[in-house]
Length: 270
Length: 211
Image (cartoon, rainbow over all chains, first blue to last red; front, side, top):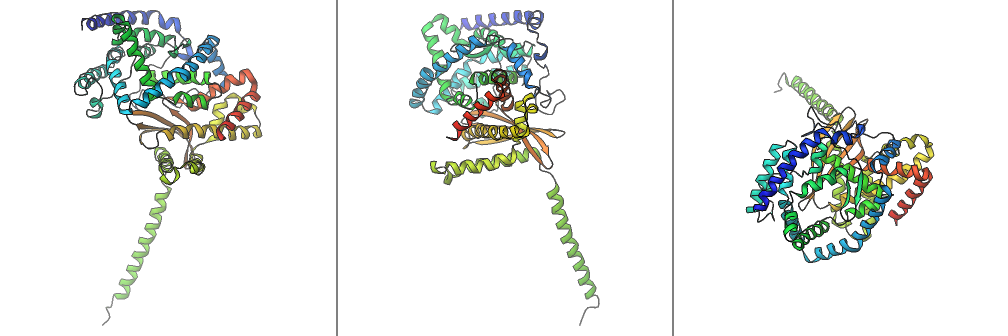
């Protein structure tokens, strides 16, 4: 327990430091004129300050090539890792997940994914807070209390089913995005998969809020075990998604990159 | 004993009846003229597709072809493939002549259908909630959510008005726009392999699908 409290201390301290750094240096460092994230958050459609969905970038296709040039200068390296990840998925991760799915019924897998999501509460709480979504961070706390008790360590989700409290799904990468940090450089990490500079910084920030990190520090084996179970469980619930993207695209690498970037931008402006 | 006013009464009744008939007739035409909003139109299409997907008699493998064709009829009525192709090709669209454009539309259409139907098929036994519509001039954005055992998939449609019909020109699945996704791919492939290279890939893909 004391670890967690210390973790919180670190978190708030880091948060403050990042906050300071963010406003001073990062926007300047990454300032990409055409990539700056729109700071108006639309809570629901039809409000005054919404992002106009029709004035978007169905622009000249040649601009896309330009964009991919500056967003993905590491393309050759990324492609190599993409190829590696593809093989890793088909040869190892997918068969293992399918075997796991065969012995573990769907209900159990959804429950286990809920347990992990429940554990990640600090990440969502802190980032909702940092994004000024105070209500959401309150909702996250309430969800955690209800689901950890009534929902049996988070296996079930009564907070959503009975109280209608939705998970906020925030992370530090989105917080940075909201502060105006652009995508910068696209990465395709081995094993971890698609990411970019901002979200990689985001991941390392969230690392301190992830209870599994502290488990890994004290019990390395248990920590990696937990992370592996989490990954396999998640994969077992999403089998077929990567395959369809791959099947429907002409160049899977570009398709996956674009899906990732679009998805993250969508999350930030949500 | 005949009532002196009887004839008159009958006349008035007839008049009233005629007026009522006329009113009903015009009333209904007035109603028929009233437009169905984009949300209603796309919902109708999705409901029809789901009805086909849930049809037990079409679930056997030998009925696959028939089932697909039924779905395609619905999709074709609602999707504006020319607009989708134009947006996906971007600047390349204007460089192509009419014949090339039509050839590309025909091929790309098959891929878009395949992708959209594939996504919807996975969620066919579940419910769809249509949530919002946002209309701006002749364009509209309709958002819907497919849910399946606790997992949700958001599907938004962008539609353009074409006389009385709202036609889909982009589908945004889980915040990822199909058209933008293809545009990114097309642009980069054209930059590397020219239009001919893209066309070759497209044909190969379509062959793969129809196998």
